[in-house]
Image (tube, rainbow, N blue to C red; front, side):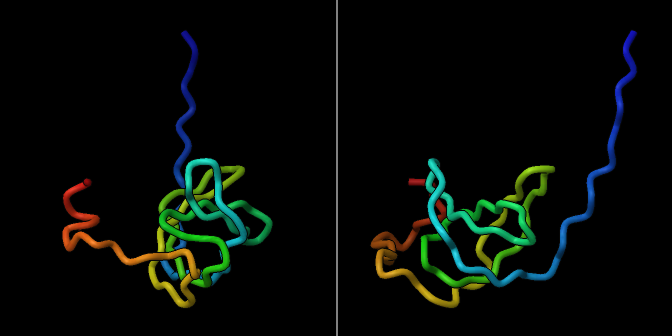
Length: 89
């Protein structure tokens, strides 16, 4: 029977990180680089300057979500529905 190796996950940084989004990934997430590592950020657009917090970190890439939007991209529009982000539609 093979042994399973259990690795403790590294603790994610808690402080927001300031970045500029470089491009979009195929799934629509913003892409940037922090210390040479690719970071995919939900709900971020190219050209936006923002602060994000890490939600996951892997060997080759990391993921995050927007904490503070500093500079908006011209393509960003406000949602018409007051329930956007809560109901899922």
